[in-house]
Amino acid sequence: MKEVAFSYLNGFSLRHIDLKVKKGERVALIGPNGSGKTTLIKLAAGVLPPGHGEVLLDGAGLKTLSRREIAQRIAVVPQYFNMPFAFSVEEVVMLGRTPFIRALSGETEEDHSVVRYAMELVGIEQFTNRTFNELSGGERQKAILAMALAQKPKLLLLDEPTAHLDVNHQVEILELVKGLNREQGVTVVGAMHDLNLAALYFDRLVLLKEGIIFADGSPSAVLTEGTIHDVFGALVQIEQHPSAKVPHIIILPKENWPRG
Amino acid sequence: MFPALIILAALLVGSVLLACAIGGVSIPPSDIARMSLDRLPFVHLEPDWQSTHETIFFQIRLPRVIGAALIGAALATAGVLFQGLLRNPLADPYIIGTSSGALFGATLVMVFIPATLAVWGFGIISIAAFFGALGSVFLVYNLARIGGKTPVISLILAGFAVGSFFTAMTWFMLSVSGEFQHKLGAVFDFLAGAIRVSSWLQIAVAACLILSGIILARFFTFRLNAFSLGEEGAAYVGINVERVKVAILSLGAFLTACAVCLGGLIGFVGLVIPHAMRLILGPDHRILLPTAALTGASFIILADLGARVIFAPTELRIGILTALIGAPFFIYLLRRYRKEYAF
Image (cartoon, rainbow over all chains, first blue to last red; front, top):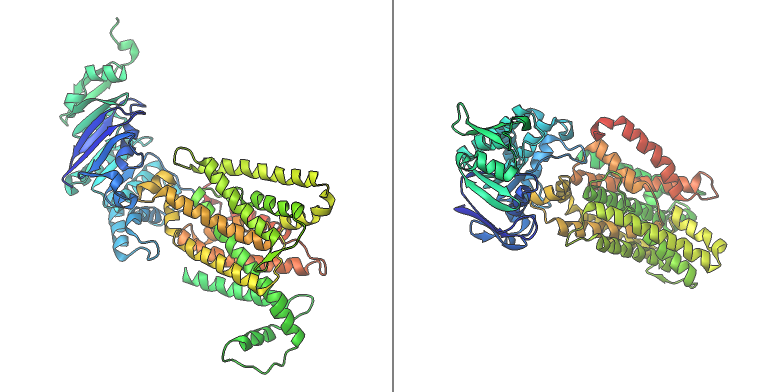
């Protein structure tokens, strides 16, 4: 994968988005609710067809690829999951091998070793035979991450992967994703709600406002008191994170906002 | 999986033997075995059995038992397909309007076409039921289609609406036909299910259709597992959701229509058998499909046997028995395996 380029011209919630993500980048999409983060993830995953324009992966239009071919290259970690039936964790992770398995032949030894590897990488091997639905929210999200990794993706898309998780699981999931990106060169694009986590774990932030890209750049370039006020309408104070050299947002309650 | 398949296959053979042996005239199982062996090529046994037994076995009991097995296998397979596709444990083969469509088709013929015609041993009422079931699924699918997609929830809702409409149309048609009392018995037969097999030709045709449906369904079992991730999740792991959905819906509707054509609306099999297998053997559809088909076949054979002998010489309607056995068994399973179901 030399270069990933997405460009959309979409009539609904995204307008005239022209975004190019390079191989090996770690990009967070940030912005208020309804600004188009999730839509952008779905467009990039090829499950929503763009109204206008085109989504390109390695220079090839996603619409020229079959779903199976797309899933062999792009994996998605969605927000929250429950399974209607009592699948074991291993069976759920094995679903990540779907794009590689033929309908009748079933899983190969290679599929099993990829699944074991993904589960060890994420640290859920002790849950192998547990029922997925019995796991806690954080453990489930790790299992879903392992499922996505079992796809051996070149591009990993995250749709608010840490929503509803406690702080420990938020950090664990994002550390895992960062490690994958650093060690295996997996390109990561994630919709993120928490701006501080986005600044800590991603090196490029794309700030969306009402379906357009409002700012795009390093965390310190994008997260300024001015942009946050313009996009979110909230007054915040930006400090330097004490150890990581990224901006840290201090939320100001309304009573502390300057008058006028 | 293989031990389970062997046990279930043995259960099926046992059910067939039992159902062929018991009835108004008892036929010793050893005679059944020897009569069957005698029909095999290159095997010739000295016929020391009664010739009336041979006639009853080959002309009456065996076709009916095979018909029952085909119905059970078709309904259980359709249940597996619909539950997996719709991610809904309440789904059964009748959920998207097949039953009401079949009832409507059958009643239409009962009311308006007095002649009795048959094609390949299938009566015209059965054939109308078959096309009624398929037609209603076609209608439901198209009504549920929104902007190129057919979300599961709109399928279920459209199925409910179309089903209610066809049921109402059926009763309306009967009411205004002036033959309400006269036709009610036939409609009741169809509603409560009754296995009526008329010829070996009919069985052969039904077997070809149903077995090929089940074999085709086997191609989709792995993809059905991915549907448990939700439609979007299935797309993320490489499933062409809309295309696979159409294929599974059509297959499920086709199998249901075949079953309805042979035995009317036999309830509870398509709901209970997939559940039972899932609770015992896990949710992997690759295991679920063959085991549910085998168990469904045995279940209907035994239920039909019960329907024949419990109040002999009066025959019960089989649908009454499947629900009478099926409902308490279902409740038992749910209570026993509550944890696995993660209620």
